[in-house]
Length: 103
View (cartoon, rainbow, N blue to C red):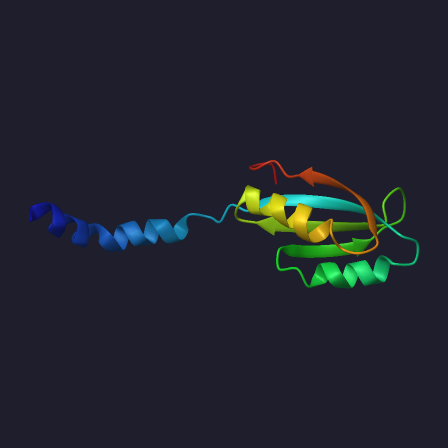
């Protein structure tokens, strides 16, 4: 019974510490090549995906860059493979994964 009482006494401290733990999000940048003239269509499609935090058209070797975030790395991978790469008019992608702690 003493241990249970001790847990309840310390519960506010424990909960406070849990709430102070920062959210660690897995981050990826997806560089996208698409069919000519379809950039805006793809950008609009990407904006509707929950894990897509930023999308920009670019000049250079790639047409679009998208910043993707999710709490789970595996889920991030699934979003890229099964959602982003399946968007019509995307020809190819290159994914750059962020390194945790180097932001």
